[in-house]
Amino acid sequence: MPPTAKQALGRKGEEAVRLTVPCPRCGKARHLTPLRANFQCADLICKFCGFLAQVKALTLIDGELPDHVLGAAWGPQHEQIVAGIFQPLFLVGFSSGAELLSIDYVPAHILQATPSVFEPRKPLGKTARRAGWQGFLYNISLLPPIGIVRLYPPETRHAVVVTGEDALKDDGL
Image 1 (cartoon, rainbow, N blue to C red):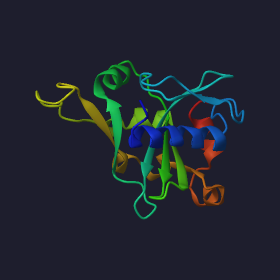
Image 2 (spheres, one colour):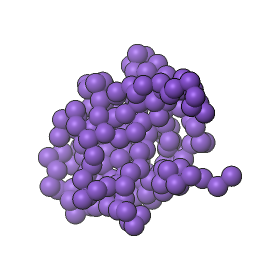
Image 3 (cartoon, helix red, strand yellow):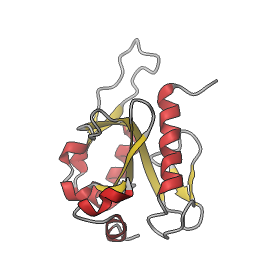
C-alpha cells in the first residue's frame, strides 16, 4: 500500500534531518538512520552512538511554526514521560510546494523541563475505525524561545540566542 500524504511528508522530514543535521551526540554526519515504521516515541537513531530522536514534519504557513503539532499515540508517550524518558524533537518545516524551509531542534532537557508541552487529545469515538485510540499534541507555544534552536537554514543559526552545537551539548550529548 502506498504511503498516505502525511506518511510521505514524515519520511521526507526524516530524510531532511538525516541529510542535513549531524548526530547531536557524536557529531557524525549522515549517521542518523530511520527506525522501522511505528517505532515507539522515536523516528531516528544514530548508527554510531545510538542517539534517538523524534521527527515531526509539517507544512508551514508564512514560514512560522504553529502553536500545536500533532504527536502520536498518547499511551506510550505518557509511559515514557512518567518514567522520565524524553526524546529530543526535530521540527521540519516545508512550504506548501514541499520545499524544505526549516529544521528546528528541541533538546530533550527542554521537553523534560516543560512536560505541559504534551497535551493528550480526546480518545477517538466508538464509531471510529480505531475506536478508543488516543493521540497527543505538542503545544509548541509553551516552550521557552531559547528552547527551540534553528538548525536550518544555516545562515539563520547565528540569529538564535543559542547555537545548534551549544544546545546539543547542553542536552548532555
